[in-house]
Length: 383
Figure 1: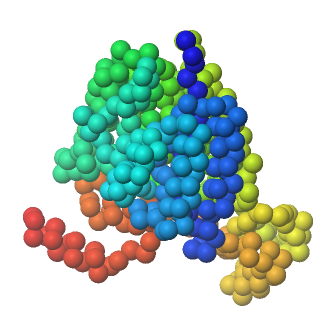
Figure 2: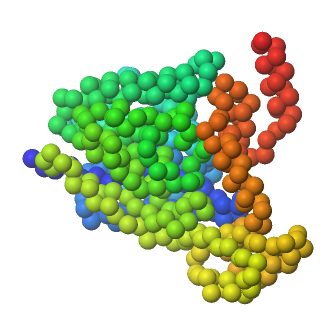
Figure 3: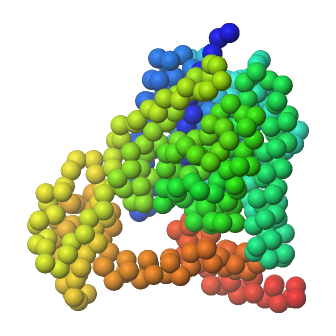
């Protein structure tokens, strides 16, 4: 019997920008070309894309064109594509692409649905579970702890149901954009979507599946507590400074026999992010030795006065030029770290204003105080 060969990628984030000016589509294209080379050389049967295809709900024309061209190139190699939507994707937008995607044998899972959970292709069955927001399957008025239990239990039931739906197939593969407890975050995910509220136990993953292809967490890792073979392959390039120092990978997998053969493929990166610290006793010019091609920098500056900070900042700008994306004083970093420690794990899901503020922060958007007044008024009327 012929083995099944496939490539697993996730978290493409087409359309990603840093500091509102650095477009990352070149980085994505550089990585996707390497993925395409492996698909071609290994004659992969399938490409699995585990969510966050785009960085924004309504992607720009350039990003849509990039993804479209990549998918078409993959399809021309007679490789079928199976993908799920992530929390950054718009299910409605992706559904609008279905007519042309179907012509290229691209299967998209955009909404959780019991009757549209499985894609069968001969002896292979794919279960697709896109990102499911907590508000879609929990009652927030029941309180934070009950909401967590509701979400986890609902996902557990869905996964169990999915496993039973495909148990008679020779090969069974699950693709999901989900957060599992015990996974190591990449430090660039939306804080709200990797909180305890979204954590599902690894034991909830049914052993029925031969391989579980996951997206959502940006750091490459295997789920060690899962009863079967499950991986997050992480983002395809360093999305922001939270991923500074991280290498990037994707998986080439062969299903043959009882245990999948998983090859971890390392990507060469077009550009990297690095964090540096300029201490009070350091000369600004000393940091010049860290300057490298195709690298962007975040420098934390120790200074006694605002004037000293601004002077050191200007000198850093002379050294690093446009590659200097962020310069922060040390006291600001400390304040943000202290704030994060205080807020960690304390998001009150029963308070819609707090949830919205956390969402705005994760999106990098400024909170609208006028909107808060309207929400408070509506809540008072409801009470």
